[in-house]
Each structure stands twice: as C-alpha cells, then as structure tokens.
Image 1 (cartoon, rainbow, N blue to C red):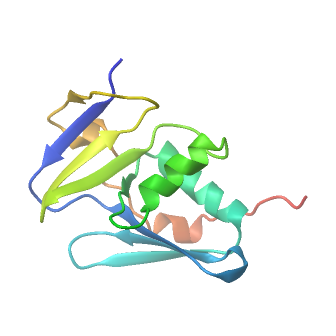
Image 2 (image 1 turned 120 degrees about the vertical axis):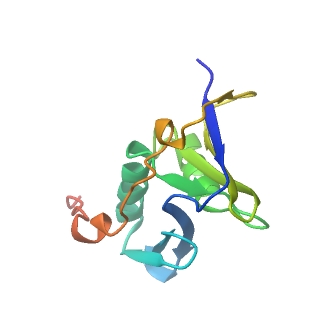
Length: 141
C-alpha cells in the first residue's frame, strides 16, 4: 500500500515544530498551535524524550521538517532507523506560508497517494497540553 499525503492552504494543524536539547539529556518539545501560539513540553532524560516522541508517532501528530538543520521529523526518523522508536511518522512541510503538506513516511517510499482530507493521515486536533499532565514515569533500571 502506498503511503499517503494531503495538502492544504490554511493554518497548519498543531504540530511539533522544534526539539531543543540542553545539557544532561534535558530539553523542550515546542509545539506550534496556530500562527501565533506555542506550547513547550519539557523532558528531563532521553528515556522521557523517547517516550514522548513514541506517543506522538502513535497519535499521528505532525512533525515539522528542518531547514538548514534537522527538524523534529528528521530526528524521529533517525531514532526509528536506530530501532529506538517505531511506527509511521507524519511529516509536515511547507511550500509557502500557509501552504503545507502532510506525508506519511515509510521506509523507501518513492511515491505517495493523494488524499483530500488531512485528517485521514494525521491527528489534526491534537492538544499538546495533554502531554503536560500525562508525562509517564519511566521505571528505574
């Protein structure tokens, strides 16, 4: 089955816009809600980061592509390639301001099937604030 894509010309759905890493495996996931608003979700370990990213894959949350540096989508794909994460990430890219495309990313995909409804591909109503209250504790090793 061919992976799918959908394009639109309005405000992009809520998506993971940036993944910022700080010292000692800490950092922030920055979600863009609309053209103006962002939500910042902190993580305090690689395990917590991987758990959050896996949840985003599972819930089909769009992941922004990078430009001159890797964006969240490229980071997630690298972690999938390394066997740390699994699933089909949803890539969000732009052709111009407010002209965006969602794409299911699968290994070695060379062409995609168009669908007219972005909600068939991605969770376009994802609320990133739900992650603030539901960060799960990782078991001690």
